[in-house]
Length: 292
Image 1: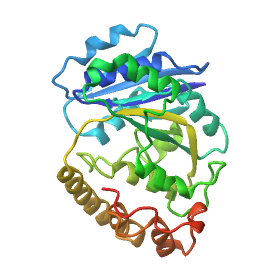
Image 2: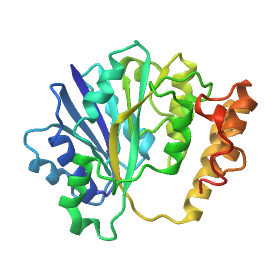
Image 3: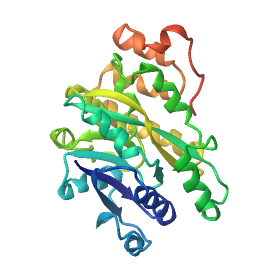
Image 4: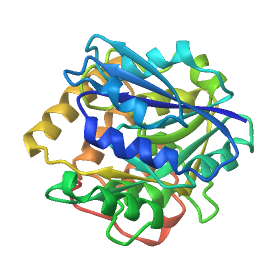
């Protein structure tokens, strides 16, 4: 099986080095190929690649145009049947590739949603080996973010879901899809330039195109956490939601923003859109008050 791993990067030399080390330690028989799209970095990232001679890597540099366009640039360099999206600052567990492939080899139009976890170090550069050890052993020092835990409740223990909102679990930093389906919808919407809802919008189009979402809880990668201000997230959510909603102008997209800001629960969101309640949420109240 041939698999393309798409990694957009912008000035993330140290995290990328750990992410590449993680792919260098994959326990898989799959023929995988890394496509690193450098979105106009100031750092000389190309020199880093020589440290991993056993990895198949295509390095593509473009002007700074945003992550959506960077990920789409990988389309011209793909060689395989399957695509796994993994961000430059997310170190993969050794079984990440095989766990996604175990789902993608099921029904034809499957989207495999992995589990992101966070690793917190004040000085990550001084803790490289510790970070790699955590990512290999799934050590309890790594924590699944609240949002990932919230949306997990739409999935049954099997990883399947009957939710009408599975696209809100789309994690473009950890997901797998067949290349033909990624190409069929034209990849990411390049109208999203900065961080925002480009991943949800991609999942939304996949879902509308007949995709079957499955949660693969053993496909884990580990985000090397870095601080960002609350204002940054609030502005990014407001701006990207405005673009998303203008594009579709419907209730399910409209309610995404109040859900993200904790104004409505997942149960309320699902009931408002479809009248049904996700599997686990049938037996629980609102899971949280505010995500941010």
